[in-house]
Image 1 (cartoon, rainbow, N blue to C red):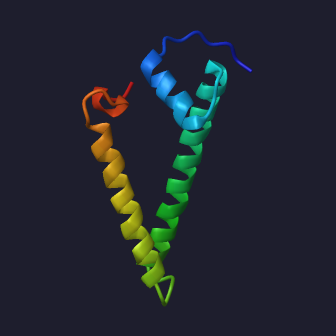
Image 2: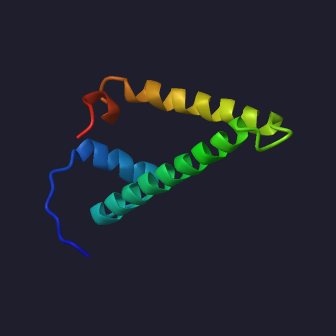
Image 3: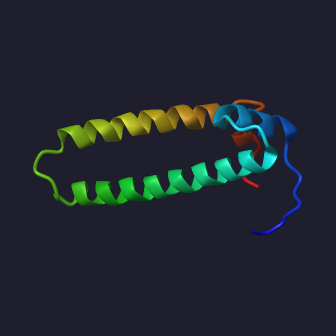
Length: 94
């Protein structure tokens, strides 16, 4: 385990702790990192699946197409939220 000293936005840390159900700063940061990695891995898996679908890998894609539309809609909501003033996404990437 590595010891690292970083400055973290207190409001953002509090919101993350609330969203993740954590109490300790270390637990919040680790849970947020874990969630980010899991999301990236899931996104990559879905991307590979869509490539397979787009290449004709399934004969009946109605369910998968509906899921793709649902995920796109959910991502649009996340993107919209990130652009709101005061949200972590409105300040740009660190």
